[in-house]
Amino acid sequence: MFVPVVDQNQHPLMPTTAARARRWITGGKATAFWKGGIFCIRLNAEPSARKLQPLAVGIDPGSKREGYSVISAAHTYLNIQAEARDGVKDAERDSTRMRRSRRGRKTPCRQPRQNRKHSKRKIPPSTRARWQWKLRVALFLCRIYPVSVIVVEDVAARTKKGQRRWNRSFSPLEVGKHWFYEQIRKCAPLQLMRGYETKALRDQLGFKKTSKKLAQVWEAHCVDAWCLAHHAVGGKQAPDNQRLVCVAPFVWHHRQLQRFEPKKGGTRSPYGGTLSQGIKRGTLVTHPRWGKATVGGTMKSKLSLHDPHTNKRLTQTAKVADCSQIKLLRWRT
Image (cartoon, rainbow, N blue to C red; front, side):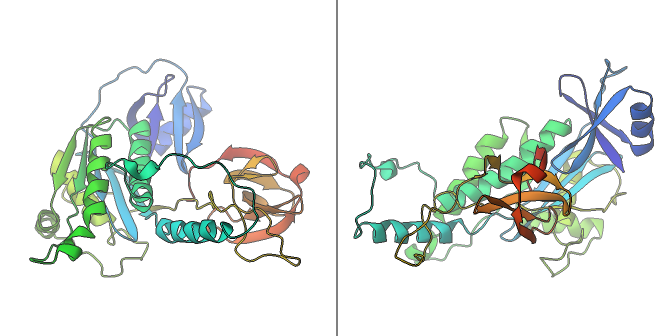
């Protein structure tokens, strides 16, 4: 295992071994911290050398799961399998239905504003959320590793001759990926590989990809990400680290102004938001009974606590005074 290292100004340096990081922390040369579920260290003094080796990040996009690998010619530093961001399209449909139903009720409403869909360059919400999630993970890796190149498998939808409606339905995919490429080039050079090229690299290295796409194993998605990164930096023909860090985004109800079903008497209470009793949802807290948990929703001045790994709800009756805040999490690991 290798530990990411940053200097006093948060600039990433070459990762170090766990044993050396332990010695630095014990001797006071470095300070340990967690970032995005990854254990890192921060040097307390100027490093003795700043020589950097070529480091590549391979990204294998997917509809349900995605793979990320950070490697150099000598070592494999990190493998991430992330859950894809979905569900935004259904949430937008429900939001539209609720907004239209409120028009027939005597409900306070805001003044009309100008048409936000007038711009032709607008990215659909579901497409933007999906590619923004990929960008968040990629930028996170660039903050803790000295990335020199990013290699992405260029996803392309299969078009059909004479099927204009079929081909037009894939335009959000093209718009989203080009927006992602434009943003990712701002932090590191970008290389694109087609799907058949990734398969040729995988076959050349002798790897087999499992058909179980939702399995939490290296052969599901990180194998392609590793092959893409290996194509950029070369080195060993097999990874020395196949351990996975599985991450999943937090999903909140941002625009749900009211509950779908009214309560007794016809009243509809507010629902959604990102704050629960003044605490940001997704904050890691400690509770005397439930231990470490993440903050979810709120009801009757009480907090809902969830397991930080599985997101399973632990309780709905936690008091705010009993919760000690630790930090705001980026995602579930």
